[in-house]
Every structure is written in C-alpha cells, then in structure tokens.
Length: 219
Length: 221
Image (cartoon, rainbow over all chains, first blue to last red):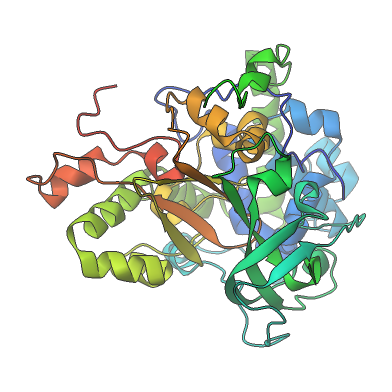
C-alpha cells in the first residue's frame, strides 16, 4: 500500500527532536498496550498483519498520534477482524460472552522464554536457492501493491548492488494477508545516494536496505 | 558539508510541523487510559491475556533490557579482537555469547564505524529496532522526522544531533525493512587505551549504537 507510513525521503517533518532523559513509557496505558500486543497478537495474527493493520489507519490519525496509539489501533482492528471481540464489545467495553480462548493466556512464568526465545523468521523450507549473488547488479521493481509490502517507494525502479545474501525469510507480502509464509531469499541491497536522490547527493554516501527476491530484477 | 551540498536546510526551511508536538493533553491521556483499561478487561475476559503476565512483560522491558546490553557488546569488541571478528561475522551468535537474544534481535547484523565510514540505522516503514541490545526505542526514532529524513539527508539528521561529519567521511544508511536488526559498532575514542572494559561500557551511549552520535572519551553532556 502506498501509505503515509512509507515516509522515507520526505523532508516536511522538521528537525529531529530528541527528548532528554526520556522514560521507557510515557503513560501507564502505553505499558498495557505494549504488553497486550506482545502477548496477544500472536494469537490473533502475524507480525506482518499487525504492521499492515497500522498501515490501514486513517492517515491523518496515523500522523497525529503516537507510536503506541498505532499499536492500540492495530490491536483493536485485528481483535475485531479475527472475531475475538465484537464491534459492540469494543465500543461498550463490556464483554457479552466470556470464554476460554483456545490456548488460554500465557502465565507470567512464560515471559522470559518468550522474550529471550524470540520469533525467528529465517526458514529452511521454501525458495532456498537464491537467484542473485553478492555483487550482482539489480533493479528494484516498480511495484505498487494495494496490500502490505516492505518495498518502499524511494527504492522502486532504482539500480543497486547485492551486498549480502541473508538466506530464506518469511515473505511479508503474503504473510500479512493469510496467504502463508512463502519464504524466499532476502538480500541486503546497496544503492548509492546519488542513484536514490540525484546529483546533489554526496558521492561518498550509500544506503543499504533489505529486499526480498520478488522485489528485484536483474539490472 | 559545503555550500555545494545544501543537505539539512530543507528541515529548517520546513514550516512548523503540526504533528511534531504530540504530547497528549491530560484529557487525551485520561481518555486513552480509560479505553486501554476497557480493552485489557475485554481481552482478559476472553482469555487472550492475563494481567499478571502483562505486568511481568512490562517489568522485563523496563528493568532487564536497555542500551547497557549493547554497550557491553561494544566494549567487548573493543578489547577483544577475536570477539570483534565473530561479532562482525555473525552478530546474533556473538551477542548471544554475552547472554542477549530474543524478540526483535533474532537476526542481528553489526556494522562498524571507521575513521572514514559512519553508519546510521533507521526504519522508514515502521520503527524496527534491536530490542535485546538497545531496549525499546526512543520516541524520536519512531517519529516521522527521523524516519523520513534519515535516508535522504543523513548528514542533516546527524547535525540535528550535533554531529558534523567531514565531507570525506562516507555515510552508510541502513534501512531495516526486513527482520534483520542492525546495531552500529562505534569507534573507540582515542585516549581510552588505559581504560578497563567496565570503564569503556560506561562511555558507550545508546545514540552511538544507532549511529547518531560518536562515543566521546569524556561524555559530559
């Protein structure tokens, strides 16, 4: 989706403003949203679907709200879409039907294993043989899908070089839409700053971005 | 940069940004607190989460994870060349040697600053960040200004942080668009040869591991 979240290259947001001695969370509700998402999302849908739910926010709301409001919006969206909550329950805050979720909630003792174990996305099945090798010249495809993608607009149609072959990884463009992981090779692709931003960019500079094989053509 | 490269000026020429000041009013915060309490009670009633487990997860990210982990990795790489070699070759495994692993750090890559190269990490599409080594990201990393401009005007963004690079220094930007998480190995400052590993750890800032700062011998500010 060519959404407002795809903001690489825009210069309209002013200077970066770091906050001195910033707390990890700014309010109690942020802690609860963070934890509910981390512990509840896995039972609703994939991380890619969660990201796409954020991307589907109203763009003016996206830009005018904070990070954990994005998470809250996506969590509510998916809880309703996946049938865990009805729209009426969400609006009223009152559960019409209480019930045991199939897996039940994780106990507190499970938290260290969840945090330290993580959720790796490299796979040993799927498309295992990479089409490209380090040093190959590629062109990022000019794709404009209406669904989720991790191919930002600012690299589309640009020529770059394969810098690393990372292995076979879950493909977000399908995994966000209930179409399975369809793992395929992932690459670090390096673009010169001048290729991306034109002749005024510094000749010394470059940018590397991680792109799946289906985002790439030979140059 | 010289006047030939007006990078960074665009940010200062931009009109006042209506979206930058997102500090919620007390009324907005109260409304969010209420809405989130309602959502939590619903998800607990449905058996999706339990409040005790939510507490435990929050405590973990408030107390057990943070940039001190990354600082330990950096200091070890500075004092132990064999460790540094392993870190640059397979960061996930080398970081796990020090006990750090897990969510949002399953596939780590560490990129090294040198006298001629400066690395800068961003996630333009969301806010991907290496949690096991740096903890949860600061707000500026998640805000539009940083996410949008780091790729097109990295030198201007670095200037926002007070870091002016020579024109001869190559800037390498890393946009974490997939599930690889990047951390910068900053340069060890001159004059720290006599410091112990513990003293070195204290010098390494979060910002230096994102790539928006250098490590200073005397970090007074």
